[in-house]
Length: 434
Image 1 (cartoon, rainbow, N blue to C red):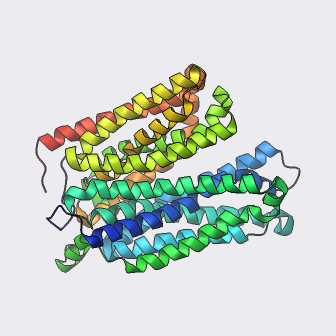
Image 2 (image 1 turned 60 degrees about the vertical axis):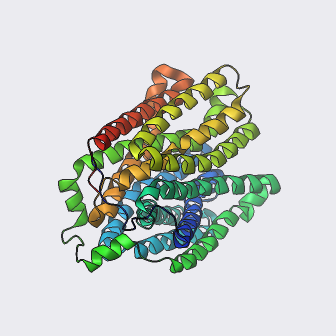
Image 3 (image 1 turned 90 degrees about the vertical axis):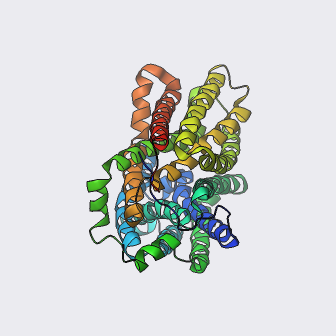
């Protein structure tokens, strides 16, 4: 699979404006992803407050997780629509709009009346706000990758995408720390009385700060050149992608599957899985998750830099194999009692940073005129399918692997990622058209 032109600047050195763009983009991404994931950290109080009293706790919590999943299912819609205008009207406009669309519903969730005040309208409004959040993140993540990739020199695209992805993962860490702080400083009754609103109100407020900061960003040089040459797609960008770049879409979706398994299983689900399956105490499980999330941010930058040095395909292949070995080591230790859980989980978090190679793989696969639409469609559809289906897929492995099922599932997707990387490396050796 050949690569296509990325950035207009021929130099390899990052300029001050490039670093400013990366910093502002990563900060906005962290705040936006915090807004998206903080919902799941407060699923328990939301399940008690937004459904009628007397509802079985398991049912109320399942309904809240269903609302959480609706955000994933809404991602393709937002991604496709925002990518269309990003390819036709400019990357910056959609890049700014996405963070605004995330800040507004996050702030609104913090202000919503509960079921005891407005009845069934409460969960319906909560669902609506979650759908808007999903639409926003569907445009934010691929839009941010394309935005930074087209701002920096082409031999720094991996580093830029890795930094941006690190910013997104820091958002998860911030959400986890916010939940831990509230759990430690507020009694359960105080959380139900209004403490649960704090992280949403703060997230919404900081989101509007991110909107203001993005005013200082300029349009990407690649899009400016396309507009000046009148080379913007005259057809529907997504139609062009599906008609002429189906191979790029397939490879991008497979790489996203590996990314999804690594993030959803090893970062979002693992603290609960190790408590239920291996008897790890909750404080130790969440401490391990915080260490792994911090290491993940470093890993994203490291693997993104590696992609610049050896090629995104080779970096994806090596990173996927590292993910396979790290997962096997952690679960083997857990099965033996978990004596080394904390250092192994932190090391695995760093290896999960191989997800920083995935955006570099994707942005290289699509031509500039339809790049936003290509990356957005492949990433968001794959994430909606595999992200929403992760629990079911892990359940299939559990039928014969038991409590080791998460490791087998991640291992399977890691081998898939390694195969994609190896294929792309072969294509790079056959020659890339720049």
